Length: 106
Image (cartoon, rainbow, N blue to C red; front, side):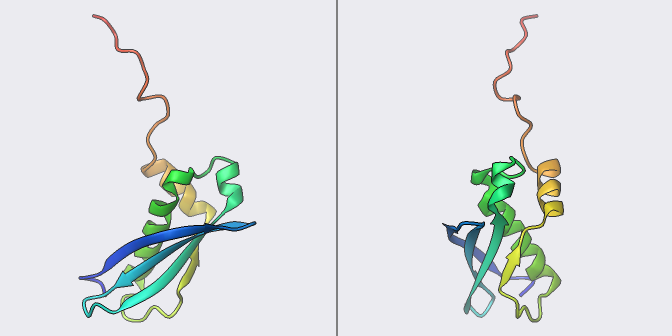
């Protein structure tokens, strides 16, 4: 599964406690497998995650699991941890305010 996999985001379901993101993964044989990755709603409310970043955060988590367990991945449900959210925000999230700063006149 390590070399030729396709990860397709299918959609999400908003629950009372978590948002559940659904993915279909196809390996080199083309067989589909369904996976779900969740993020607690509190992470969005506390601004540790943005709604528009949810699919990519979950996709990164799923890809890490697939890479670590390339031979057999019997678990099909994963949760994004606080540490993973912090890591995403440190390394991937654009800096706020950088898009709307006035340009200096020299």
